[in-house]
Image 1 (cartoon, rainbow, N blue to C red):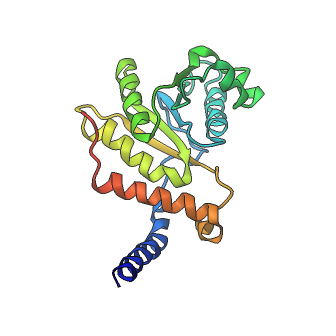
Image 2: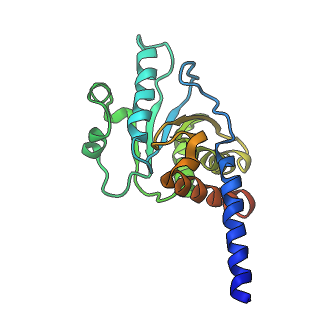
Length: 209
């Protein structure tokens, strides 16, 4: 009887997670990709395939709009969580050749220490403080943005005397649309897993001081 009871409880929790998990897509980006605000840095969270290439394309749009010099400010391209073995050569393989041609080392910060979203935020806070950044554009996948935005706003915003403003732009990465995640196993795994992480950070986590 006890096994049946706990089996029923786990089944109920799994069903509830399936029903509620789509909540992670319930947000609105602040940047649409057409009207680009002035920012000090484009912050790409490198934990997913295709994010770096998409974020580099956004940087390239800023580069085009900054020509001639004196127009829209050219932001730093900040790539977070690439891993300790990352290098300029590794970055080159993930960026379109046309973008890489105009992307110089002076335009890039490769953050290689963080291993999760919380670490991404802490290391960005350190760099932003050192460089005096006031506003950044956060780029990550659709399924990841709600949790990432929450963590970054808590770490870089609400607990600081001078908050760093976070703009957001989601990029398409997974082979499923947010409204279709229940139609395939991969979409379910990604969405439900992210939802459970979102619940933890929303209700139990506090940013480091």
